[in-house]
Image 1 (cartoon, rainbow, N blue to C red):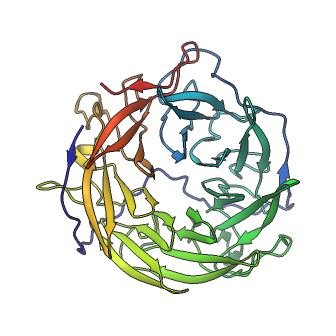
Image 2 (image 1 turned 90 degrees about the vertical axis):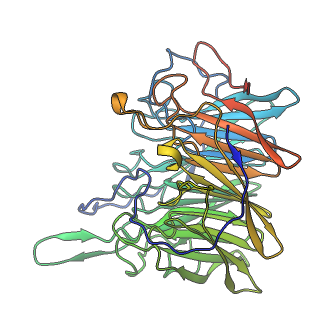
Amino acid sequence: MVISFGAGRVLARWTETETRPYAKPRAHFAMTALYMLLATPTACTAQTPAQGGKAAADLHFGEAISIAGNAALVGSPYGADGQSAGLAYVFNRTSDGWNQTATLLALGGKGGNRFGSALAVADGIALVGASGTDGVAPLSGSAFVFERGPTVWRQVTALVNPDARERHLFGYSVALDANTAVVGAPGVNMKLWSDTSKTIPAWSGAVYIWSKDESGWRYQGRITPDSLDSTSNSSTQPGPYHLFESFGRAVALHNDILVVSAHNETTAPGKVYVFRRRNNSWKQEVELQQQRESFGIAVAAAARTIAIASSGLVFVYTDTGGSWKLDAMIEPRVAGEVSGFQYGGPLSLDGNRMVVGAIRYRKRKGAVHLFERVGSNWNQVATITGDDTSSDSLSGNRVGDLFGGSVSIQGDTILAGASYHDSEGPNFGAAYVFERERSRWIQKYKLVAPPPTQPRGNIKAQ
């Protein structure tokens, strides 16, 4: 484990763009029928623990993570055998540490669904994205809501894009706060335009909102940059706005603030939109842009603060009475080394603390940079790595562990994923728990997916 300390810098540097794996939209002809399924309850329940054959390689456990209170959710988008629909594991913190207590899955799934590639947990609710599902059309996508009961987690509904068509990738991003669920669909084709020879999809993207009341989860509406009011009317397609923008690539939600990035692999820089909820209606408040490659590759939100990742820099904005002011441009760094953040990375905010994942650190061993706000300044206070994470290897062309490929912080706890970690098998994956002790952040636990015939989920750090 490496823990180093130093001050963050405010710099500008231009670098070429590279992003995390992404199912790039492709041209296609629109479906002739529009299927609608908003929220269908199911009888599927979580299993504790997972059962079946021996665990295999390429689970990529830790590709997505989320922590809230004493619960952590860790995604394994390729499932217990590395080839199935995907799983999400629930861990709970007790006096004995972190223990795996449930395995969430969607019945009827199949390989390539990528269940668990995007997820969020809050107050006994888990939201799991599966952008590769074919429920309405190939890769139309879906998302699943689980709720914790007295003894088990139960799937209470499956959310499906009401505009669903092929390759919409609904569930590519998700966010959850209290009784509001947000699902991004960056492949949504809201408008087709034609030339003399072919029809080309716009791939503009959209975000969809559900809210929970006494009767369950209800669809609230669709949000795009041009449809400022959330409306439940999905029969009328909005007009064209930004072709190939991939609006909904990343989402963040905090109370009544929704942050949505529009970033893809062909257009640089990206854009970020901020919406505010008033009287149950979402209004676009600002469109943010910076002349920086990969702007919007990741977003995070906290009280009156949003953070936006780009190539080498994190842009921090604060709410000043309804307008958003650029507060800081932060460059993660390590003394004498490249930070590993040159292509951007995941973010997580909690109060005056922010963690920034940097998978390129030390030949893709990966790291997490921690910042704390003191007054109006953001100071880098630590750079954290896992005890047993590895860099690229020339033998066998093995990719590094990509520690920091997913991050989540709450209070004095940091959770970091390393989805290419090999200790349990090639690309099996792991997640690491760090806790603050005085001024230091110490690795306390390493979480791994429990082999189906040998349930476990809590490995104490040595």
